[in-house]
Length: 133
Image (cartoon, rainbow, N blue to C red; front, side, top):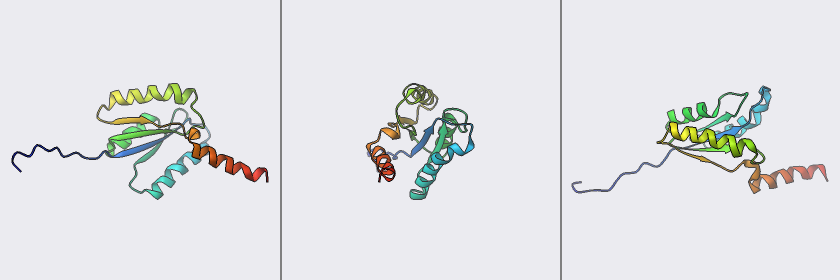
């Protein structure tokens, strides 16, 4: 239409990275991957990846690159830690700032560590009740 100055905006494609510490024990990663698999089962179109700080592949940069290649333009990194310790408070922001510099067209957010979500705290307390009854 002539004279139409409206801009068409495309909604962001939101991806999520479940970010955990990592371990030499290959069984250690099973619970993290189970969360990603459950999300994929419940929301098949949801782009998600697992990533690890050390000792386990893929690292955060590799996981984010896979999401970006698949079309994600907004990536939330969800720390799979019970609390915001040194890794979530110091190491993760440095890694995400490197990603922001490398991919300026992508929005990166860091969520609160899962263990600090009151729903997780309530669930853990509920699980513990089986040991006191």
